[in-house]
Length: 417
Ligand SMILES: [Zn+2]
Ligand SMILES: [Zn+2]
Ligand SMILES: [Zn+2]
Image 1: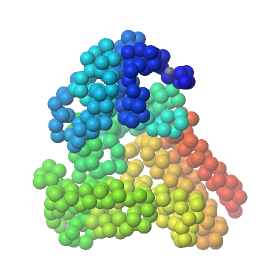
Image 2 (image 1 turned 30 degrees about the vertical axis):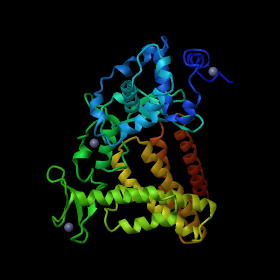
Image 3 (image 1 turned 30 degrees about the horizontal axis):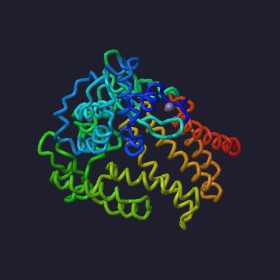
């Protein structure tokens, strides 16, 4: 067995130490317990115990989580607590008494301090960062996180900060609507958010949770946050009861879970719900993003019957729809916006080249398009300037560089009139 890659203490514990009788299938059958095992053994090891002190000292009220949490407790119980409690591990741990409640508390502590980390092999891992997770939450963060090759977390200002400004991180997906972000936050951090975006029914003017009015043409209904909680049309004042809105969202959400990446199904969903939701509604954006990524693959493999130019035009449109919304909810230096710009750039360069090759546009128009796209590429690069080279984002930097070279070379060829 190759023991170079893992920790000495863990190795001895499981091979010849107190844990030698534990069935090695524990981890194979319950991969989710990995982080818990790590934590328990870091605590068991006198040399590493002190490193975990801040994490396990964080006060949490277990009773707040035991009830009313949307099934998370039960999920932990089935997938993590039971397998650990019946594995023989509690008996092998000497440092502390391992009880179900202790494991539950560790689950919550780990999850509320966890960040998504991309491993060297491209896998997504859970990284526990105590300082990183201690920043207060805001749905529009003013900082940006970057992980270096050693998985050290670095925190940068995403927007200009003044002395005395509170430094925020965001622990939710900014491309979700307010109700959904708050739900996520309640589950992961047991927190209610009352940030400026959450208190604004238009969500910073993006209308990511707004509905189409059923009574007047062109009207949009926004949530009456301080009053009834129903959606009220900004144009005619018609009321759309909250229960109806939630029911509709649950219906679309459930339909999205069912789709297995089939383009016609996404298209049908888009057509079905477009008349009911604001064009920037987060569920429509989700569907559009799915369609755009399927189109990207289809264009590459030339797998659809439709002409490539039509597909590219559609992709440019869909990727473009996402840009202003993303910009509004993650201002300043943002990976998410950089990725959105890259997708738009990729589709647009392909389309412009094709339009020029087929004489749809003149040389002057082509040069003007390329000049505009060059600025977009440079903006995306600038947003990624804090990312280390050999990370997933570093790879993106390389890809954007390639697109920029393509643009430059055509500008050299056709730019001098
Ligand atoms: Zn070993
Ligand atoms: Zn918020
Ligand atoms: Zn109306």
